[in-house]
Amino acid sequence: MNKQIDPHVSPAIRARVLLSFAAAFLYGRGAARQTAPPELREDQPAETVFKNIQSLKGMRAGDLQGAMSFIASSLNVDCDHCHVQDFSKDERKEKLRAREMIRMVRQINEESFQGKNTVNCFTCHQGHREPIAVAPIVPLPPRASKAEEASVAARKPASPALPSVEEVLNHYVQALGGQSALDGVKSRIIKTTRLNGGNSESITMMYQKGPGKALLSRESPSYSLWVGFNGTRAWAEDSLGSYWGLLNTPQRNAILRDAEIYQGSRLRGQYSDVKVRAAEKLGDQNTYVVSGTSPEGTSEDFYFNVGTGLLVRRQIEEQTVFGGFQVRADFEDYREIGGVKMPFVVRWSSPAGAWGTRTSFKVLDVQQNENIPDKKFEGPPSKSP
Image 1 (cartoon, rainbow, N blue to C red):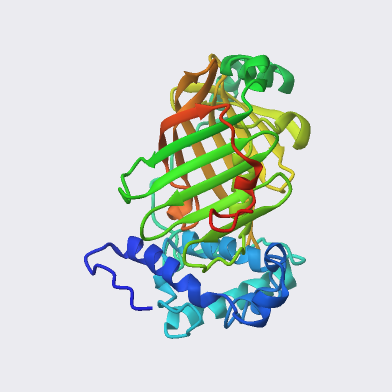
Image 2: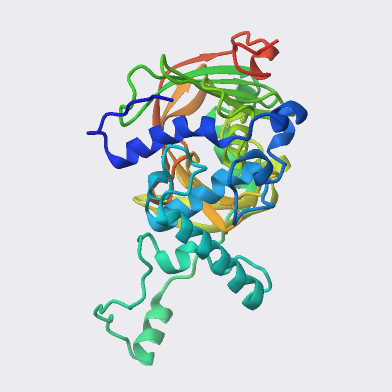
């Protein structure tokens, strides 16, 4: 593959480009592709789908991307810290060292923490390439006397009682336009562009259709990616053929969230352990925090503005083989489209901006209740029936 990359491009961007090129080399060819249906390859052991898997043998193939994002964000590095263009090669000493560290962490957890992911990459690295071994010298805050602490506690007003989940969610639904108006939205076509510019040739479209279908389509002359959910099956493929229908776990969870006509619409009926966890200050906004566990197993917090009722933040904790990985979406610039409000700016963030998470975007155009054929959600354009 004789792809040339501008040497002046930043290392972070270059790593992302290399990843898209290298993906074509990562996937096992031949028998694995011929004998396993696309929707099942993500559940196969990683070593049967990818080349040269050593320390992560036995892990689901679909969980590899989440594991790599966890490692990269814990050290604040990109893919090219350990990998060359052909990811299966062992040319960098950092890759060999990473394998040693994975084995060490797993041994510690197995022997000292009953196999739980108590110790992981971030425990020691905390966003640095080299582990933090010496505590820094920082001024200690002045310590109040017990009498002063008791006086402050006595003057502190009692926290007001938290509302119920139903009260918070009902306020949210009314703020969006009311249940009747929301039920009237049967489909959406949303055109977006990246907030930070990015590839000016790239077009990103989100197609939503009730009940529970979604397609994310990011297309450009040089590279295109499609991720979809047809109501029962999620899938992913790119124009290089490098994904071959293998859907990683963060992608799967993200497209299931995209299938919500409005953010958090599954909270009432499909999430477990839903509760109003706290009242928190978010910048200059007072919010109620509703927490719950999604059907996909992600732990999520929803921050609703106390006054407007609108959702202003969604905090998601994805589970990886090494531990929890946080992803955050902040919602801004709500506008009314056909009697229903939706955010026109969404800012995504994750530890160290790990590869594979969504990019922040603004909405350019919205069409509602367009006729979208079901076949659009079954596969990429060239393969849709």
